[in-house]
Image (cartoon, rainbow, N blue to C red):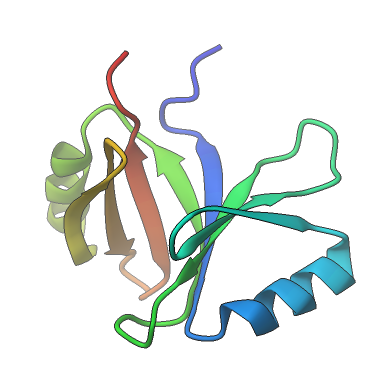
Length: 119
């Protein structure tokens, strides 16, 4: 089964990562692995559940909690979203070979799209 065009990740971005980790860990039993500087991988106790990440924005971007849709071509989806009345909030960036963009739907709801590394 392909993950393309499905919700495959979630991300919480915050300028207070320790507080967010305490909150979500205590509330839901989530665990956090800080193997990537400025980013913690979130594991949830739900069997087969979607995993996510906690990003330290350092105050350089908006705090957010968004779902992430895996796509074949991040740039093409950005163009299609704009043509459909959405907006690109943050153009494609790359981290560890993953292409990521933040978008707004026509109602102003933020979400992410990403393309994993080829291979």
